Image (cartoon, rainbow, N blue to C red; front, side, top):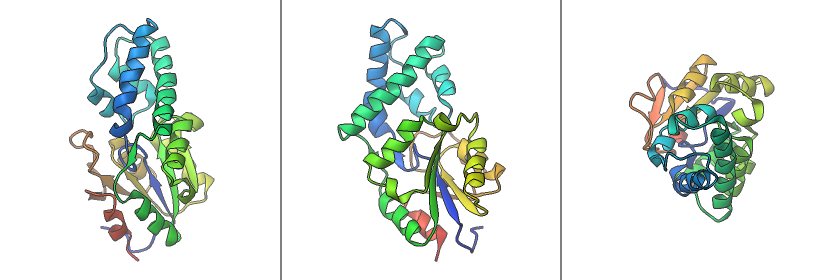
Length: 223
């Protein structure tokens, strides 16, 4: 059941929720593993990009263990560096897209006096640069990432956002089980996003509402 009162804030996951990650990660993935191979850090060839996309929402250490299980700690650390470097290069070159209606929907929520935050398990610079380059950074009150705060779970990251900003009522919006868990563990209303195309079966179990397009969020929020 959707709450009748407007929330003070809405917390958003980034990849697969606001940002159409595959529009950026397909070329980045190719470049990362080409470089790892050239530097002699990983000889396993290029893993399927779907393995990386299917891991989004996890912490980076968990992602690389899944994507290249035989990779060394050095290879995983270098992969982090390359993922950020190549991701930012591709973004600067104009690659990457927001999902339809993201900008307009966020602006509508902002105009209603709702505070907006990003909560992501990604790297700090990546989480801050995507909104800037996509032209939506001015709509947010804060960008929180596991990379910046050193959190081990999104539950902890969301708790920090609520405490830092004195938020008493909020919604969590995301596409992965980690978003559902983070919202529920912190007593939030959870909206699951079912449009990314690379989530796992049952990923959104426990969400209070599920939307098939980002623009549906406005109808849930109400007046």
